[in-house]
Image (cartoon, rainbow, N blue to C red; front, top):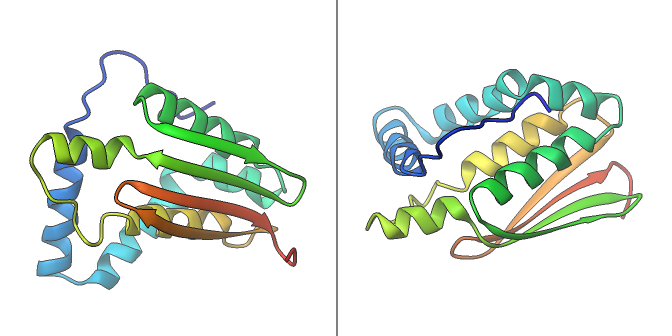
Length: 147
């Protein structure tokens, strides 16, 4: 996997991300956030996007598994022939924000929604992200045309 960080883990970067999201939304626009997160999905995670273009979700699954495990999130990944579903019952990013005494930005989950959309653009997949609670969501990457 290309995106495999090792070494000491500094979860406080989630606080910096939250603050940056608020700053960009206030001083530029929500659309600017969308553009930034979309670029992350296609440029930073380029190899995941390329594999998805070829119908291969294995690197995305490995990425989710690695980072949610590394950050001690509570999650479950379900794979079927039609879809991959990431069920997050405790997001490590939101957990860290709360630990730092920071309110998660109302736009905090926009990063997940837009990165997933970017990853799926021009691929046989489409994404759907449902926020189910504070620090909880269901991310579905399914094959297009599947009901």
